[in-house]
Length: 147
Image 1 (cartoon, helix red, strand yellow):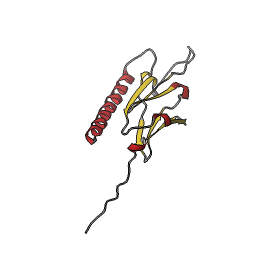
Image 2 (tube, rainbow, N blue to C red):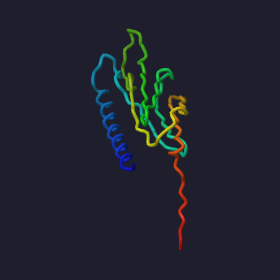
Image 3 (cartoon, helix red, strand yellow):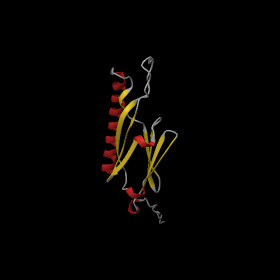
Image 4 (cartoon, rainbow, N blue to C red):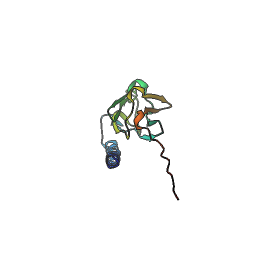
């Protein structure tokens, strides 16, 4: 089980490296609209005693533009941040923020109870709390030392 978890973490790190590099490459490729394409919002994932918590930076998005789905042990976050429309006379000098669609899949480290999953969106940060199933919660093990 530990080997599978280690392989999943390695795969996620490799995916993150490729996603970050592709994001930088796409940012340099000329398009009809600057900054529009596929982007990859940064995400933190951590585990508490009761839950797996995922936090994603999604500034400037409306909650209706964000889709969250859990299938088995995979969490999918997707959505689209639209480029604000400007007047035809406006001249764009610099666009550093990314716009367009995104989709991120994450293998969850433990089995979760999908029916109790909760998501909040505040100040541009999406937080998804995925409660662990009862049988997968970590139980402290008391070690007895015999002398």
